[in-house]
Length: 495
Image (cartoon, rainbow, N blue to C red):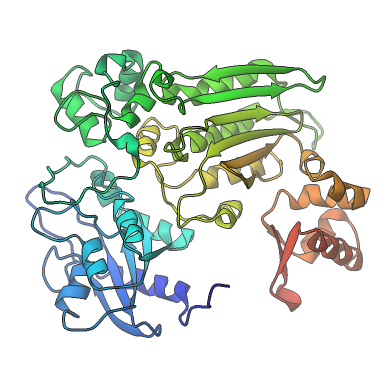
């Protein structure tokens, strides 16, 4: 059992954000925006030791550098806890011989780091976090709502960071990689890129350089889609733009299967450029499935637009955030009469948990930033985050149960419900057998919410508080809900 921290993480996150707001903008000739960053340091016993913000003692100095090197260089920091509003810069992100903030943290023997939001700079994104994890440091992320505050305070920095020219790495820098697909292979050739797809990307991303120009290729290299010193694609480049990426990467693409009510099946493989796969899959489903229709009002309402937006976001999420180093598994799209199941190889990206995904409030953190960036520039994915907000919003707008995440090794499975009743139908048969007809209707309501109260449930069902309490207690006994709090403030959360 995990020991309860001796400090309130939420209060420390909020304090770091308050410290962040003191950051001093750096005057730069190149007009680059500097980030606003706050950092606070706790002793091993959880008491506050010190704080720092970017530029506090000298213009341009990182908050972590100020905190560790300028304010506490002579202090023994073994076992301390650090909260930083921005991901610490990774080895190789700073000009040699400067140490990165992540290296300074490890050298100080800090045991735990809470990170506000990942740094979108391609030289840092997720790599500072991974270096800390590989060095034995426990990493946690700020709460999602606080991440959004940090993001808003740093809009100019985030916008510019994703376009920065990658600085050449000195040979002495330690390489930090998130995936083997960051490198190239003799099998990858630039001529295997789809010119049509590259042109679409150039147009949607607002790039003026022609696709055959050195400037455009340099841009792809900066995004880790081409080798820095040549014209050979990386694995990520082949996935995104390759005509037939599965020829060289068997784990690429999406396998689709529709299971019809009469027991027959229809299959289709989507194995072309990744950026085309979501739209191709959606068109296939539209051609094969009846339109989702709402009968809740006086008139039938066609909900196909928003329903397929939900499906598209889910497919993008699976393709972009899967673990491509699991070579024996592929993303899969499985359709039943009641559900659409999207299977993505790999557990949630550490430190994100399955419970956080299920609550639709997981911190923003991308497993494959290179893929995520291209999809966001083509307006196929949220700029940051995991698409969770869009999924929850779309399902709520069309009155469907909220999607559900489960882990079925080696797949993270996202289940989308096609009807209100399908959430109850998808329960284990042993569970359905012990639910009354009224409880099954009640579960259809609960499946559309992450949390509820007894009074909300009673009002929706048109039943007494006593009956509502009996239903909710039964759901808890069946491990469908868990109780949060006590007394009048009691809430019930889906498990």
